[in-house]
Length: 308
Length: 278
Image (tube, rainbow over all chains, first blue to last red; front, top):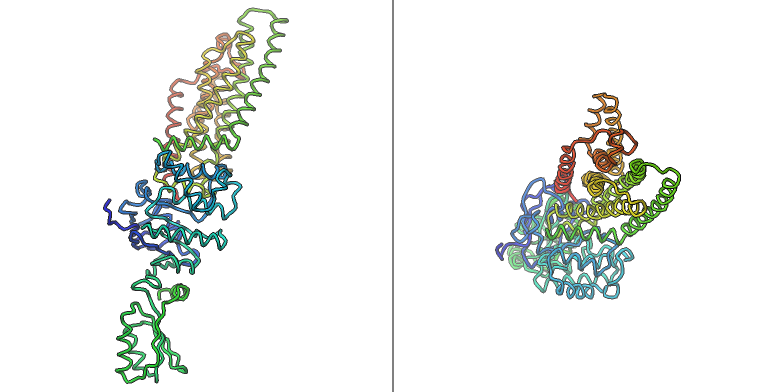
């Protein structure tokens, strides 16, 4: 397919289990090279969404493509790696055999396979356990070998479903480093995680999903177009000021006592306009302090507020 | 095709690693050896104390080998069901299937590959035991069952039928439920077979029809009947019933039906597994 096709494209993907709707509407586009966070409370439909994209669950409705290939077709998974949430593997295989086997499904030639297996074992810090059976592995080791497995075909798109759930802080840092490396190579990463701090440092963009529907997709932190929060300290407060500010921010929190206003802005380019507006409307402006919205605040406001 | 072979290889490797293969083979060889010792003494005494026409001796030897064949057919069925009963359902419930099914292969390759791996092990196993028993008998007494290769192939086919049914069940049912279902079906076919046999002896058409119906539902027992028919000594065939021989042979149409049955079961398994969420 064309080189410019997005890594992931989903249009109206829906999954029902009987009368229960697990995913109501998954519509999103992830461009090649992005590190994309997929966030939501438990039971929001995150894992089911990944399963649909990877052909493990057939959508009840909707369409999707991975690099332009329709989901569900074997061809759509050729450039894809996947670390499942339940990282259970054939425990009777040795670590190196396990990686070799999975590489064979991608038709990687034998010599390249053995080089790749060595590399990956080193990458996840399991070189010394290569001859050990997976049945003897700890939870953290299984997650590491699972991550290595997800990279065995040097994929262009990796789905990581809670990749650090079984790891200690060192293991988490390892995963973060690996994601960073993948990203700098241009690999697209689709990260499903509960750990917002982790998502905050690794992801460029995130989608929030609640009750099986994508509520918001936003750019993070230092990146262009990130959502920001802005605190204004003014000399006096009145309704005209508050109402006027609503043209930039649907939500205006007012702290009368300290004469503070809190705004949520989609774009930092409106800051000078806001300053001009406050001054022009006859109010003294003592402070205008923008800061990136913390992911946690955003998460809570979206999950609690339905749609923020 | 490459994916199918890879999955088959994985299946055989798993059986080897889990020591299923060696346990079954070791005990199978012990079975053949024990049979050999038993047959040696039976043969010695029969030749010593009841010398008679070769035809009578052969019929007696035939009876003993067929008893062993019957046990082998049962062991084949047991092994078929036990190895396949959880082969897909177990991997689905443990989630090990997820990393396999997200590789760029068709779901059908997983089903057919597993079937192929189990099929190869099963057929080798039945031929090893059946062939071992036949060869031991021949070495001691010089007696060889008629059409022995065909007969063993039919015994193997009986096991393959059970394998295919239980693989189909394994795409949807939990391991225990599937095991119960498979053995119940086997039991049904078994009883149906005997109802038909007795019905045919007593010229009761309803009983015969019930037997045929059960054979259509699952033709495993019919394959044993066909096997024992082709392998029984001509003398017994003319004399009539013994517990391990058949007065009336199932038609060769039943053989074609059984082969088609296996194909249909595997096709249904592919379809059923292809449609389920993992």
